[in-house]
Image (cartoon, rainbow, N blue to C red; front, top):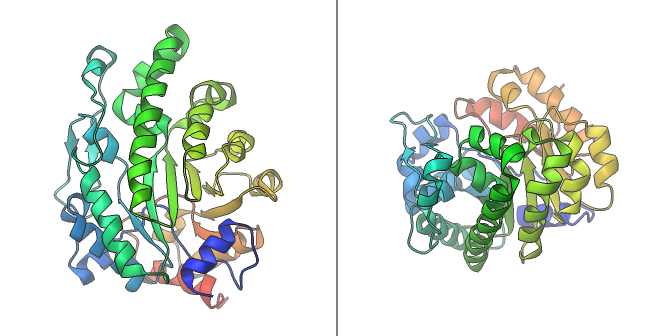
Length: 332
């Protein structure tokens, strides 16, 4: 069973020889950048460097997948938000959300022309050619609410929740159209899995999530042809039922999530992906990393992975400790 087969079967809840050590979240680390020569910010901007770094994370780091892009500002930049790139290899780009007063300047992007969207599409094509049928290619993009929360200030979102919900609902319709259009172009490049990133919905709570995020994510998922994994940062325990109801094949869950509830909620409906703490992976000892990896295995993760994006400062030794624990068994 090769790495691509293993991941796709795990997400389909089919028997596998062991859980895959695939990483759908951000997984570039500084040591791999140094060893490969593919570094941020170039690997955030250009397709060839982006694909090169993703492949290096697989080849040098041992990750059983390749994933692009490495940040969550692709759509926001293409929609007209100012994006700042750090000079250091470990600094992710930052996009500046607009205010309610200037939000009318947001544009509907063309994935083939605007911002870095074309570079991401080309990177997926390059990785598909490189990976063949052996290594799974994962393409990440934002959910509709992620697009809103990266382009409109959270203060304005919060105020509109109470004072002008119709404004938010109108914007969510627009964001859903943008997300679906971008996803359609991504799927034409034939990735194996789509990673749907939602960094903010956990702050809404179940009732607001039901109205302002869930139905739009579900609409997006229904339009997809490829299996999708949904990631909501932080403690998404109160949202688990609705996460499953979106129709995704996998739930990427962070360390704070109640894994027992996640297992009960997702049983027979979606695979669980996670839930090793990125902080333990970065700062923990070998024994601590092995302990968390074993805990993830015991708790029923179909894909054993970090619960959120890997910190770029994580050492290669720590990353490989987690990978070996999944693929070969833990020493302790």
